[in-house]
Length: 547
Image (cartoon, rainbow, N blue to C red):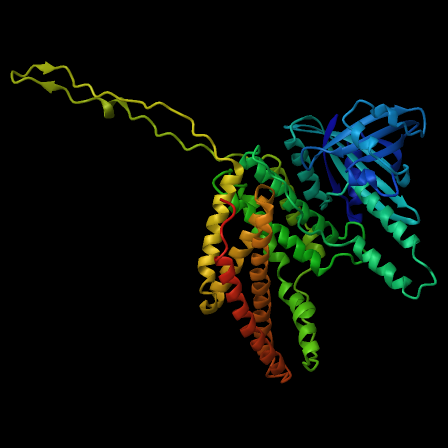
């Protein structure tokens, strides 16, 4: 069977209020203790299968879970058990027999959860939702993570009910979307526990290695591949692409919101902000790629991506200056310049956890689950009878004649065969390439705004290629993507150095050392502009392979 649910993290400041709200209804409480199993090589996790035994009050239930058709759907197979005994024979003859039979390692206990669950059902005009508020702990070895999450599971009705109810609770209590399941969190925690346990305490670098492993545990979520095929309609393909982009946004936002670490460990870093904005930029590029073939997203989703993209980008220039440009200048010999610390102009944790951004995420996720085709063109309204009736004709003697008849001919209607997806995307990417190549031929003579516009066009082309990659010839895609990356790398550095040049130019009055930076940046920009022009020339000479 499958279930549809959405999970939101409940911050510490909201836990009491959430509990009180749930208890206002006919709520029940149950303790759940779950044991999760896998092999030392994480074979089940790699197959995206979660296998557990859970004690629910006095009863034991064996559960196997797998991802479903979309972000809120899970395949769940339950079997009652007489006790904590894992029985794989119950899956014989089912859809999961093959992946379970392929396991080579020995199954063992990897991690466990111990939670108190509050249950209550609520209704909306779209259906009935079960609220399940879990508080407790996730444990792997000597490591623990807190659990504080509110699940919204559809019991009857339409998926819109999930979002209608979740949106109310999210806005009321400041809840945060967390795309990770308990099994995903547990698998990652178990891997970290094994890595830390393997460290040699006598190794002088053990502490450094421990810190590196913990930092890697909270690593930013980059872009992932999307698989499309010609059986998909443009609307279905757009939904699949949007799901990947929003997953990148939501996962980085959860770390920035300090879902697991608020007040304990500052996990969110500038790279999380960058990757979150990359996810938003990819989503905007996807809208452009499928423009005209799908209905546009709601106005709130369109406007929200612009607003929140700008909000998260307020400190980008300062991050680039501090983490990228200045270290290179110091290595090149620039004297150290001591600046007063600029005021903090962005609180990424507050924005990521904020009601406005989290509300936008829910709106965007709901839209992505049911992307619609474009509305058919409205047929012209038939003219009124008074407008179509011909004027009566008369004989010379004044008597009326029969009106002239103007026949209407309706042609044989043949429904146009839709173009396959690879053809649609290929043609559009070809046009995007032509625009980038044409403008790039004159790159060296373009002004700064035109270069910035060209850089955005290049990013859009690169993201569009990544979305359509599974439909394109891989052998020829590799070479083209390399040429496009060369262009983008140089444009990105040019953009960063142009920003830094303006910054240091404003400092020369009080910090003469800044003249070193200006000289070095100017020389580097001259070199980069020449290299970018050569890269654009090579890109323009590329034969289009997507047609």
